[in-house]
Image (cartoon, rainbow, N blue to C red):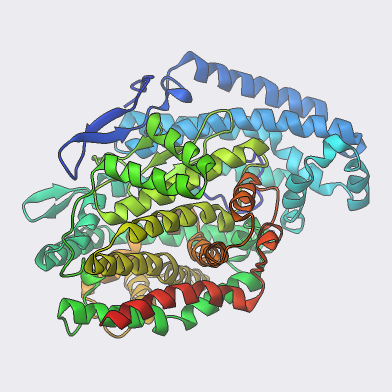
Length: 619
């Protein structure tokens, strides 16, 4: 987190129950009934919301931030290079303290957002951080007012030169910076603006109960039923999820409309050319690169997703697919549940075979209580790896149901975690990787795990099932995420003309789904509500294209690796270790790749199309 705000904020839980354990605490494995699923222990951050360490950190951050402002405000331009380096290092120390407290509150809330005490703690923590960090707002604003020539002279000093990448990334926002008092106002109002609406979304979804075939399920568990082998179960799940979101659609529409308008207001004040401009700038990626990715993927819909789902309909014996058939297992898939221990062993083995260093780092997450894989009421749906702060370690959250897709999700999030550990060597300010590159290690970890499993499988029928599963995962990562990006683009463009009714949001959603999935699909009316469950639209507008960026980038990288590129493993680890110190062009250059080359995206998409070709050849 940074104490100044250069654009619209992008957000990403029982009190006193975090205890330190020498080994993970396990809950019953939902897949096998064995006591095999880990829950995380947040004591490496703080022992509890009322801990003395947390109170001391808040007190220290408040005192230090005020002292920092008194020492440096209005004086940065006159500092020597060495003195400026000292100031940035001091700023980083305070920011890491605030980052630790924020991470703890966020993780507690993700673990149980239905607990009122946790919700109060999360909000109180957010407000305290906002108040304390308001003393630091001047720092980034004042750094950006230093003349280029003056700053260049300061950067001659080796101590200051260390911060050159951070200053470079900070200064791309110079023309979008507002007056200091306006920046402070926006910063302080964040807790009653975007953050408050995001919290409302999270608490609403976490508290929703889905009646399904005699059970009452969380949204996450109900969505998992869309992958059930029984088509009647999938149909019931699709109808139940659509119904429960339909009953709340006015609230979700209000949240979405309000945040889109909030973003428009801030974008206009900051002089961003388009709704996507801030996201691209913060990702340190050029507009034309994102546009090329978007265009390349949409042009590939017919040869990838349309073609694959037409084959899938044939395999399922259906003339048309419904939305709840999209993730259906193939008829000859035994739908074997994979125990947690087996998933752990396969993933660590795949990482280790590629790089012993990555394997060792990945194994730490399983040896220590750094993963929460249980399914429970109130827990956040989906999955993430939270980097927390360099002085601690990342934490992974997911909901493990024992399916192959869950194994791939675990491999994905472990890639994030390993990347975050390596990047943390850069320190708090320089470890933050733009999301376009942050997906590199996660998707690469998935590919390593998949290839390891595929190479070990000798049964042709099982190989076909595995290959089909990988194609579906890649479609979900590339085609579906670009469709999400298209939905957001249309939504934010239309919102500039006035509030969008829930029915119209459903029409936009259905339009992009038809375009991306193809004519083989029919869509029942309740599917018009499914846009409402995507948290990225609320927390991080236009984040979603990063998944497609990362997948296509990794496909191209993996193609280079398979071709025997000399020293690939070490170059790859060095890429991860760079954190936010380098841009994508610098990082890809050692591999002979360039994302600004139109052929780059085609190379990544050709890998997916090649898998579809292979499946098509099997009949």
